[in-house]
Image (tube, rainbow, N blue to C red; front, side, top):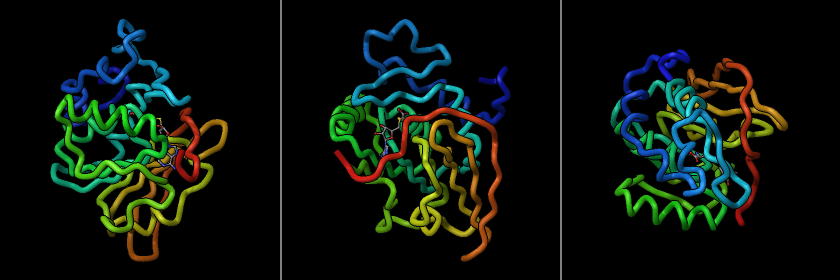
Length: 196
Ligand code: SAH
């Protein structure tokens, strides 16, 4: 990750601490530390390690910051955020993954502040505002609900697009002013509404 340009030592140290193989199906064990995405069930994938590093670095968070993750999936990105000493709120819409990842968190003693089974499109208004929000599925557009749940100065990192995604950072400069920066192409599973 360092060779690929990731410089934030908080991110690198956190990724060093999380045993990625425990978040994968045992049939992929020998590949766990390659820079690859893998199926995690329910037609979903664990993100590439580089994508996790890139998004985590873009957040520019401090220990203790309050962060919302949309798309818990395997729980790997969430575990990295917890190792970065953040207060993590995370939402997953697929019940099968929600149940499996809940028991994995218990087993590994990873403790998000809240792990919610629900639709991340709406964010988590009862816990807002957040210092940062990270979306780990491809969003056709930026949901207004997420923008309104950022603190002033808060950062939303979201891959935007339908068949491929452009990594996008939105910073909330004031109550009504937001600035947007884009960072190239990535591929994610889709951000879907509702829950199943
Ligand atoms: N952060 C995950 C990435 C998993 S893939 C990891 O480290 O493994 C993206 C996840 O987003 C999938 O599990 C998918 O079910 C979930 N997702 C898609 N749309 C969602 C929505 N509206 N709300 C919550 N989760 C969603």
